Image (tube, rainbow, N blue to C red; front, side, top):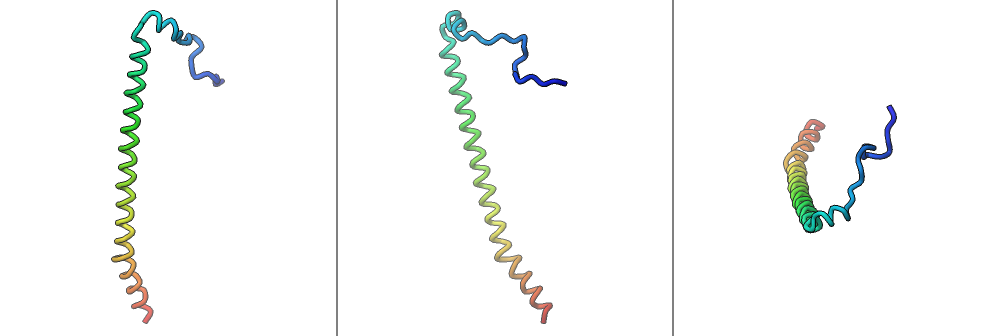
Length: 84
């Protein structure tokens, strides 16, 4: 099976932006609006993911703190107590 370098099928014609602009005077305005909406959606997604990372990092720090304050001292006491 051979793979083409082009992701666009060979029967697809390139979009003629100038022709679209001439036939539809609001083409550019709609295009800008769509791009603006996509940009805001991507920024919102980035904020959500950054917040999730922050919350996960805080949870990992709490777990590390619990290990250091509760589990590790008990483990050391158990190991050292059995050595006596």
